[in-house]
Image (tube, rainbow, N blue to C red; front, side, top):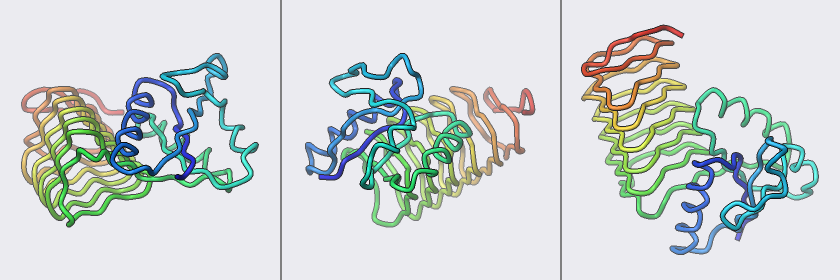
Length: 214
C-alpha cells in the first residue's frame, strides 16, 4: 500500500478519509497516515482516528515520495494550497474515486481529482485536474469540466455542458443540456441554469441570473 496524506482536516477532509477507507475495503490501496493542516491548534490532535501531522512543513521531514489529496472545497484556495505543496519535490497528487461511483470506461479524470460516493458519470466526459465531485452528483454525456472546479452534493450536470476553470456549483444545482459556464463562476444552491453564464459572477435562482460580479 502507498502512504497517503490529506491536506485539510475539516469536514470534507473527514469525508475523503471515509472515501479512502471505502477504497481499501474494496482493494487495499492506501495507507492513510493523517492530515496536513496549517491550523497550528490542530497539530497533534486525533480526528476520527487519524493524526493531524502538522502544516506544510511536514513534507520537509519526509524523505521519500508521498501521495497527497487536497480536500479544500473552495477552488481558488485549493489551487493556492496545491501550488504551495508542489514546492516540495516529494509531493505526488493522486486521484481518488469512491468504489460506489458508477461510470463508463469512456471518460477522463485528471490528476488530483476526487469523486465521491453515489455519483454517476456516463460517457465521453472530460474532467480536469484537482476537480471535486461531491456526493450523489450526476454528470451527463460529453460534459467537460476544467481544472479546479467544485461540484457540491447532488448537482445535476446535463450532457454537452462545459464548466471552465474555478466554477463552483452549489448543492442541488441543475445545469441543463448544452450550457457553458465561464471561468470563476459561483452557482448558488438549488439554482437552475438555463442560459450560459459570463465569467467572474455569482448566479442564483431558477432560472439562474448573475446577482454580482467578482
